[in-house]
Image (cartoon, rainbow, N blue to C red; front, side, top):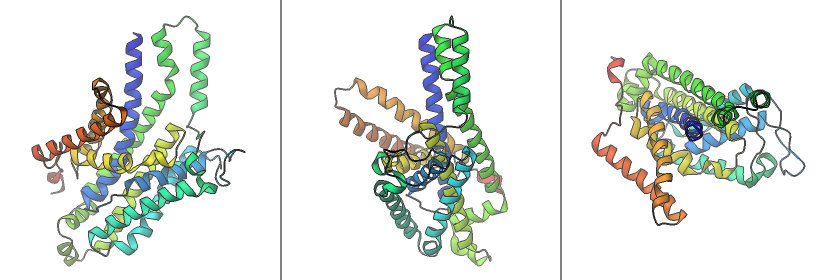
Length: 337
C-alpha cells in the first residue's frame, strides 16, 4: 500500500503539471488553431503571468533580496486576474504594430518580446530579484489545508503509513482540483467563443483573410482580440504554476518548456480542437515524464539522456504528423456549420 500511495501522489503531481500545460495549450489554440497567429513567444507570456501574480500576492522583499518592488500580499484571485490583465496589455502593445503586416512579423515580434522579458527577469534585480528568482510565493489556502492535515495526523498517531502519506499530500489534491476547475472553466469559455459567430469569423480569417475582409469584417480587430485572449489565458497558466511551485526564476521559463513543448502538445492533440489541446498536454507530458524513467536504463550521461528525451519527443511529433496530420483529435468543423 505504501507504493500505491507514492504512485497516487506522483499521479497527482503529474496531473497538476499537465493541467497547467493544458491551460497554456488552450491559449495557444485560440491564437494558432482558431486564427492562424504564429506566436512562438509563449514562454514570454507564461513568465510574465507568473511574475506578475507572484509580485502581487507574494510577501514583501526580505533583507537578503535585491528587489525593492512587489510583495503586496493580495489575495490569490487578484494575482490571477492581474496576470491575465498584464499579459493582455503586453499583447495589445505587440499586436497593434505587427498584426497589420504579414504573419511572419508576429513571429518575430513574439520572439523579441519573449527574449526581452527573459532579459528583464534576469537583469532588473530591483523588480524580479534577478537570477535568484522569487521565493516563498504563497499558495491559496496552503496554511489552512496543511495545518488541518497535520492536526489530523497528530490526533491519530496509529494511522497506516500509506494513509499517512496520502493525508500529508492533501494540499496537492486540493491544488489539483483548483487546476482542473480553472482548466474546465477556460475550456468552456474558449469552446463557447469558438462556436459563436466570433469563432466562425476568426476561423475564416485563418483560411482566407482577404476574403473575410471583403465580407466587411475588420480582420485586424479580430486578430488583435485573439492575440489578447490567448495571451491572457497564458498569463493565467503562469499564475497557476507560480503559486504551486512557490519559487520561480528566469530558468523556469526556458523556451523548450515554455514554448516548444506547448507547440508539440497542440499539434499532437489537434490544432483547432480544444479537447485535443488538453489531451495533447497530458499525452506529451506523460511521454516526457516516462522518458525520464526510461533513459535511466540507458548507459548514457545525464546530458545525453536529456538530449535523447528531446529526440524522442521530436520523433513522436514526426510520427503523428505522418500518421494523423490534423492531430489525434481533428478540428470540430461540423459544429460550426
